Length: 591
Image (cartoon, rainbow, N blue to C red):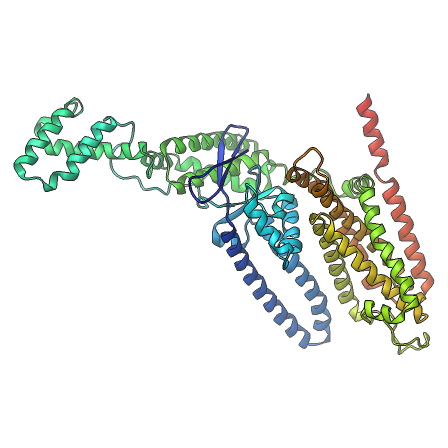
């Protein structure tokens, strides 16, 4: 892959495939990307308004629908805010509605189609960093202008670029083929210019002058005109007109205008291209293994043919629309043939049982650093609040604070975490989405040299510590601890793991090693992505526990026992899961 200068205002870069086929891309500029983002934001806001209206109507329809609408609203809101860009780009070939309207597409820097991992990485950083107000919001625009491939921060981490989406959706010859034979020119460039000059000026010549000039031009081109046995039956002017009609398409193709040779090729290859497109579409939907043996063989032959047609289209000087379309479908076939992003390297069960805990152990220093920055301020704030109750109420904001301690045997009094059973689904949805959002921000904030992750950890540590301090001052610490214990170990561990992955991103910015920062960032983003996915899954479990079990009317002893059990299971899981397989693999490598 290499960047290529462009004579236009648009920057370009080229990718060379293993078949030595060059795929050229025009990079999208700041203006077109900003316009696409504006369209997407309008679509997103309108969708949020519609969803809010629908949820409100459900809430007014009755208690049963109201209890259903609240958790649905939290989940839909979360998926719209965090999933709009991720899902559209991952499922729609690197495009959102805004990008499609502006003719833009996201691809990996090697020309491969956008993967799920790439979509998640680039869009998490877009939401947390690039779309925020000053100063972080300016970093994305500055990065697009400053980098050679017009990459914002999320693109650098995901290894992606935004390109102009050349060509249509079908690989068919759209160029019209004018009358006349198309092939190699018979006249030289000088001879054709003489012929074209005569025909351009003949209407303004007097008849006698026109006859003499036509005879002179015919004499100069007699070696070609005399090949036609019927040339004697025509006047000199008629012979010159027929010769021009035959030669004009050939010289137009040679000059690289709207290539008529390329259009003829497109019409000749129409049926094979249609078969190729059908196979590529089928392979995209269900994967290359879904094709039969005969279809795979046909796909390989057609792919080689399309790559050869791409080279011919360049040689013929094809029109931009045809050339862009052939190139895009050649790239689609290459990506289908060589892609690995659509394949799962390991099963989900194996990843949970072995790969994720091994990743936590591998990057334990980053996770421990995050834990220190979360629990340190938490402990310090709790101690400070004990000596200064007013500070505690200020920091905690009164969200978890009971006005006074009351008799716990009173059935009409609800305490911290105790909710009506009908509200438990709403609580689970809220806790789950809120904690996942915090963790996603902690991860993406690491791109700001770790500062974003640091701020999120400090803020949450101070906030939680203040809440604990306030409850302790009121003599209600056992109440809040009974609520927190069942889910707290999983939840706080997951936040530390996600934040540790954020510090991994920050290390690429601060300490890239022998690699460039761009290469180090792309490599470490992929490596630490596993930690983020694991943290999100842990928070789903923690949210369900926090929503349904933690506020349940159960004895405190049961809740403390449940929390201790989860802590023991996590210690065993992260300490020992996957070790035997790693040891076996190491022994095999030594044999």
